[in-house]
Image (cartoon, rainbow, N blue to C red):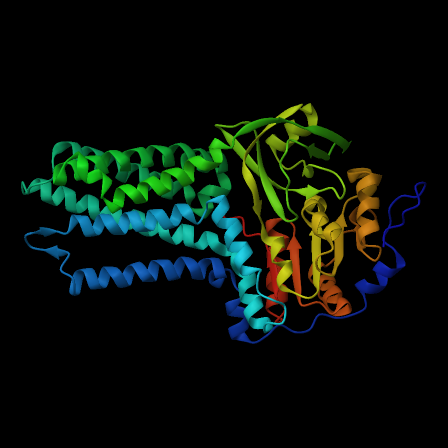
Length: 456
């Protein structure tokens, strides 16, 4: 472990060096296991495919069995129902209370259950695949709706006026814009555009859906029909889901401690208790930009801490300027590390400020765990207090000082820690590239492994 003498620079201990050369990585599994662990077949993508496949089944029946598309017109109400159903699923699955409920249900399974079942339940944090699949399906159905509305209007069929055509065309353009900016390649290179399009475009789309629904329902049954329309109630649910986090928007005081130019420790105490493994979203300009960070409750103290490292303009300005207040939205929300409860023993693999996500679990000690932390000059970067706190919780932690010993093979260290600790799972908290290397490296060898998926 780390040499903790105050007059000595952090170094890799003899124990760390021994671990690093102790066990060789076993060979990867067969072709099927390697394919299943590849980027195209993640549980996230499987959920996307499952939702899209379910919609394709409905589309097949709509065309060949239910007669939604006939020569005398399209069943607009049925197509609209598919749009609303998918939209509702796509929005609700991202709601903070729903996310917390999903994690609570998934992690309620006892550790006496067979490991394959618990291993699958641990993938609960891939719920974003439902969001993507449902919203893409909603957009596709809406394109069908738009085409049908134009077809009806061109033939002078009843129930389709000029106002409905205008609203429909506006929504088509808006939804395609949201989907375009959400493509992984676009989101990675233009994240601010993605975030603002999702926020402002999403609000505008919701308003247009309300306007469209009012036009359709009023034409079919008058204003009184609004109270009995399933679409109206579904949109009410979606609107409430979107609005709820903003109703809990507040500007709160924050104490920022800067142990180095690379990191700050943010301390919050505004009457909100954050549970281990939760995250909070922070902003300095609430309409423009939000960032999620892991909460670390302090044992015996109210409030919580967040470790924020320099990783871009927003975090850099925060570290340099040390504001006294920040905006917080919504409630603390469960994250990937919460799935530790499904296993009897786990290994945490982390780099840099990822320790901030692992720390609350190490302090809570709800599940026996061991830590491998690779970072640059731990004491100089994060301060003695945080490093000592880590070591107090994990006396046998392997803390690898990359400035003294270079970057280690984290896949190898993960496997060695997994074997030495007799763990059931590996949880990796790091950057996107390394997280994928560790998670896929473990899963290709049949070891349950989990890590963030950067889907938002």
